[in-house]
Amino acid sequence: MRDTVTSLIENYDSKGRYLDRDGVDQLKSYFETGTARVQAATVINSQAASLVKQAAVTLFAQQPELIRPGGNAYTTRRYAACLRDMDYYLRYATYALVAGNTDVLDERVLQGLRETYNSLGVPIGPTVIGIGIMKELVKSEVEAAGIPTGAFLAEPFDHLISELAEKDI
Image 1 (cartoon, rainbow, N blue to C red):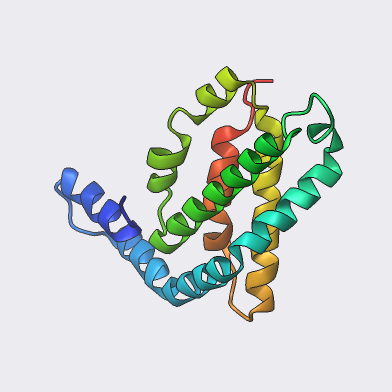
Image 2: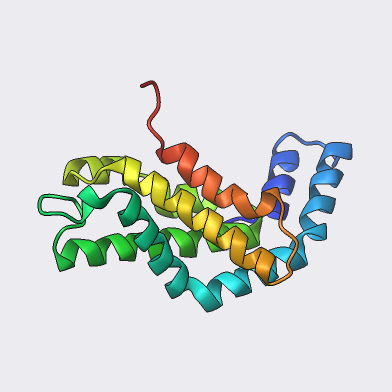
């Protein structure tokens, strides 16, 4: 897993270049938001179970067919698997938030996820909706804690959504 600093330096090093204005600006932004990112992660960590539960309640209220007989979250085992996966996405989004880099999401979450879900018959659309719900809940909780929010807070969730969302429909 890499962070913004490591990725940036690796990129410049591979090209044999000194840091230019863009590189310095990226580092500056990363360090300026560092405290807010760590504080946001603290809020997420302290409320993770509640955030996942609230996201599930909202998702199933919007898509009740998922918990009806024949739905993908029908039965206790499938419902629990859904909550487990949502918790997994939230945890890794938090890692990416602190790192200021989405590489961990690509390496540990997204690689092969679409294929796995498709092979198991798990619909990806509700997963994307659930991640979006968690993003909004996290933003609300972080704002309520008086912590500055910005693009850095949404970036991990947006990356997950973008990579999982249906393309070329």
